[in-house]
Length: 307
Image (spheres, rainbow, N blue to C red):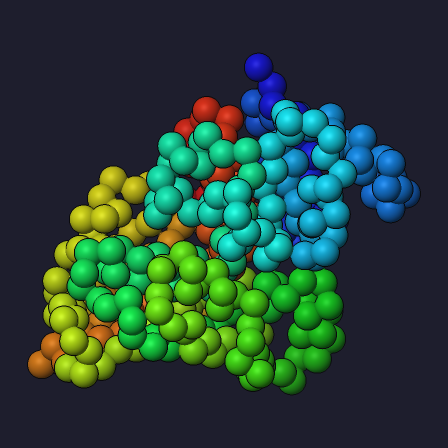
C-alpha cells in the first residue's frame, strides 16, 4: 500500500532534501502544491488532512499552525522544526536512543536538531550507563556548514565569500539547549557554543571533559566500548576506534545520513574529547526525517538514505 506524504515547506532546504530521498520510491506518493497553493491556508489544510504522513519543514509557529489544521486522527506528523521537541505527547525522532519500535508506533514525531543529534548521540548512552554524571555542567563546542541556517544564511554566505567563521548563540539561550538537557535527562542546561563555517554541509560536535574532576566518570576506553556496545548493529551510527590527527569539513562533502562518534582521550585518561561528525542536512535533518518515515511505514529504516 502506498503511503501518501505531504511535505509542508517543501521549497526549503530540508524539504527539498527529503523529497530527493523519496524520489523514485514506489512506497510513497507525494502530495504536491504549486507556489500559489502553498500560500493558501485551505489548500494546505486539505493536503495535511489528505496525507497519511505530513512532514513539517517550517518555522516553529507555522509548524504549530499546521498541526492545528489537521482535523482527523489518521494523519501522522513528523515535525522538523523546534516546536515540539520537548512537547508532551510527541516522540523524539532519534530511533537509536528512544527505540525503533517507539518511533514506528508514533503518531507525532519531532525530528531532532542537528547539533543535539551529535551531542545526544555521544552523551545519552554514557549517562544511562552511569559512565558520566547526569548532574555535570556539560559544554558543547560545535561547528556547522551554513546550509543549517536556511535560505537567509545560505544567501549571506554565498554573497560574501570573505566570511570565514560565524559565532552565534552568544546570548546563551539557543533553542537547541532545551532538547539537549531534556533528552539526556541532565540536571543543568549544557553551555552551547555553536558556529558556522563556509562549507555548505557538514557538522562537528565536540564535548570536552576533564574526567579527573568528574565524580564517577569512566576512562576514555570504557566510554568507547560502551558506545560501541550501545550502537552495535546500527546501520547509521558508527563508533570509530581510530584516532586521526585531525577531523575535517570539506566544501565538497557529499550528502550522507550517518553519524560517526569518536572518543579522544589523553595519555593519562584524565581528559577526553567526545566528538560527533555528521551532515547537518542528513542525520541532522532530512535523513533523520526519512529514517523515521521509513520506520512509521513499516520499511527498512535505511531505505532511500545515503550511507
